[in-house]
Length: 114
Length: 115
Image (cartoon, each protein chain N blue to C red):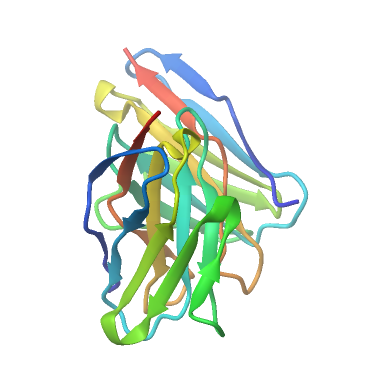
């Protein structure tokens, strides 16, 4: 079975600081990885995804993530955060079984102070 | 494109009654829809996977007789919480995906409060 772990539950930082959120998955056969964001009061939105090719993936709003197969990791980064990046971030990966079910990490709540 | 809607966005019901939540893919055909439950400050927990025209597949620990799922068309899936109890109060989120795709598009969620 797939498991996805996110290292930080809460992150507090100031505007212009750099952000990196860790994500590790367990099933090595997966090559489809996702980061979703949930802004306060809003629904989940896709931030970026990796399917194949360049392991450094660029998403919306200046976010990027790097797929490192040897480390089973897909960490999310943003060089300079803004107050509007305050949200909860979820990493997700499909499992080994059929059905395209996504397993979500526990989420990381990010608070950016103005 | 790829918009998913849910109705209602919030509902309050009395204990013992049933509540139906609709999930619609507005601009694409969703061969598979997923139902999740999200408790406050927690991650999404998959409840069931529903494929159009067939029975839903429930995750371990989810009561199929309590959470009835119907996926009658390629754009609509419904979740009915039967004989609701206060512990069923939660945020229910659906997602939809196109055929042969891992990417899921999420609805805005339905907040259910059972009194």
